[in-house]
Length: 200
Image 1 (spheres, one colour):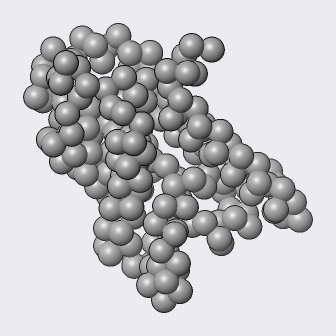
Image 2 (image 1 turned 45 degrees about the vertical axis):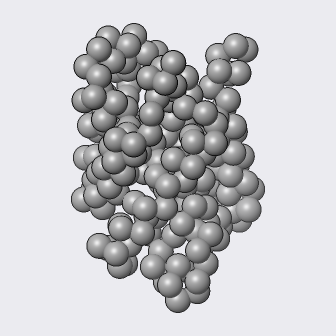
C-alpha cells in the first residue's frame, strides 16, 4: 500500500486510463470488442482522440489533453501504464504534485501540436508523449548529474523503461516523431526544473 501512496500521481492517472479503456468498450458494445481490444478503435476515439480537423476546424482544444487518456487497445494501455508507473517511481520523489501535473500535460500538448503540424492527416491517442517527457527530464538530470545512473539502475522497472524507450519507437515514423518531441520537451524542462534533492 505504501508504494501506491508514494506513487499517487501514477496511481490516479492509471485508474483514469483503465476507466476510459473500459468506458470505450461499454460504449462500443455493438462493435467487435475483440478487435477493439487487440487493435484499437471504438466510440470514444471519435470524442477524445486528436486530429487537425478536431482542433482547428471544430476548435475542440480539449483534445490536446483528452487524447492522452485514451488507449483503445489493451497492449497500448498496459505498455503505457507500466512505463508511467516506473518513471513516476522516481519523478514523484523529485517533484511536487503541481509540477508533475503541469509537466505531464505540457508533455501531451506540445508533442500533439507538433505532430499534427508535421502530419496533417495524423490522429493522436495515448499517454506516451507525456511519459517520454518524463523520461527526457530524467535523461537531462542524468546529464547534469552522472551519479544518478546508479539510482536509475536501482529503480524497479529500469530494464522495462529501456526497452520501452527503444521498442515503442519502432512502431511507425509518426510514433517516433511524437515520442522524440515529448522526450525533447522533457529535456528542455529538465534544464530548468530543479529536483527536490538538489534544493535540500
